[in-house]
Length: 258
Image (cartoon, rainbow, N blue to C red; front, side):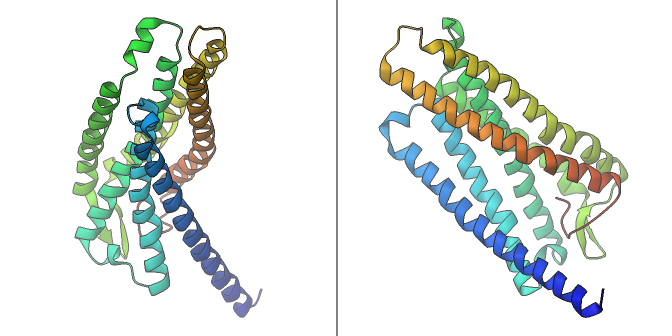
């Protein structure tokens, strides 16, 4: 392969990555904004726990998209990444990414658990599905996610044009706990178990004496949650495996640890 051919392939790959990122950024932002608009504006969803979780997830996703794709586009198009020049921006960007990732993933878990509770045939379980509990869990996960970023902030550093964690023990935590467990198999397992339980509950709803409107709402929201969880499982597993491989083999493919 000639040098010019190799350069053309690299140029094509970079352009494809940029255009794909632009598409994802635009569609992702519009989609999440529409979710927020629908769930906030419609009276039917205002005090619904599942709709509340969708709203929180959409807000967190917007921050994630802006932090990841928008900054990447600015860096790739302008050949200038402030994250590798400013330690402050390196840390702030990482705080936003880590905290929003945890919030998004565990909000999905909460929505799956809530659908299981709200569709249960057991009255005492249905009583646990409240908007108050949803708000409390959201506040708790936000606090935990922010506290969890403290070690990253301490150990993040810029060396040889790379903004990442170099401390050996912290690298082990990222490789063996953070990626495979905290944002990998733990949320995937929780969502899978409770989504299957919720699906079984929805099949029983038909035999319960409840209003048609409530029955349809439960079925539609559960369908939305299940579809979201399927997409979540499909996309999260490859990402988790890739990040684990990256850290275990000491590869730093970009200027950011994520």
